[in-house]
Image 1 (cartoon, rainbow, N blue to C red):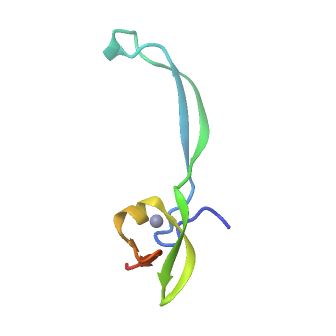
Image 2 (image 1 turned 180 degrees about the horizontal axis):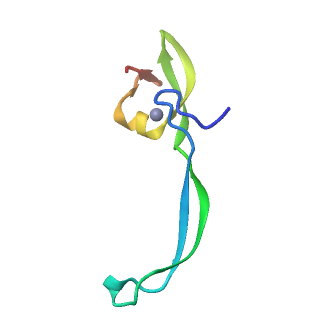
Image 3 (image 1 turned 180 degrees about the vertical axis):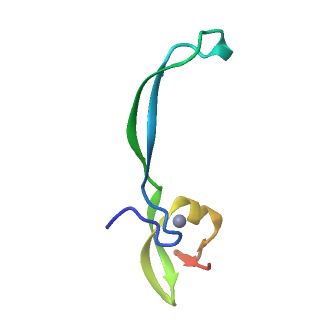
Length: 83
Ligand SMILES: [Zn+2]
């Protein structure tokens, strides 16, 4: 099963990691020089939680942002999907 939030659909995205050397101009240096660019992945913080879905308790994979936002509200020993 892939790392996808079952609530908002957030999943792994790709971006760049940029390697730099030197001292920033703001810190008195001559500026940062880029020495390399490589691809990287940004993974969502997906957690397995027990939630009430349609009246039954099931394990769902949801991201931490959805849990914090209250979309997955805490219940008695479980969590409840309200949104
Ligand atoms: Zn989510």
